[in-house]
Length: 194
Figure 1 (cartoon, one colour):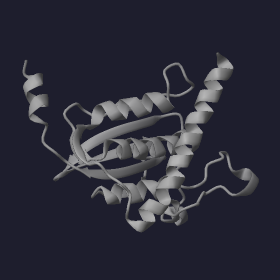
Figure 2: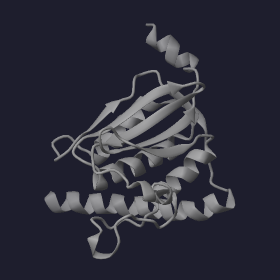
Figure 3: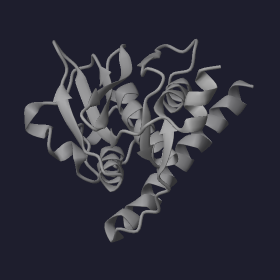
């Protein structure tokens, strides 16, 4: 069972890397297929957090996304963005990782934060460039390709949002992105009143 879990985990990781690599030419050509729809963010946040930070693991990610947060976006691409940001927090962040959401005008701002060492000021813009990793050579702690944040920015922008980095307080990282807000579908509001 242990070896099967390892194989499944590595297969998932490989699939995610292939998805990211295949997205690049589509993003560059402006042909990334998006299927925007109105959906609730909370279930997606819990699903990706549980996938990357399973219960009983060495760390967990807390989710503070309230129910009733509806956005207009491609659900699969939003999960890809969350996965990329949470993977970075798992690799480079500290022991505390959190996903939060708050209203910002006609948008929802989603934040993935951690209490790790943060990103040095001189590197904050280039972390969103393709094939960029802050640690170089043998000092790198992970085997990523440096595509996660590059792809995250392009996907979020293609869905009408923006993404940025800000330092945590008193330490750590906060990766924020916005998505257009939506009203709850009629079926969701009528179902909740029963």
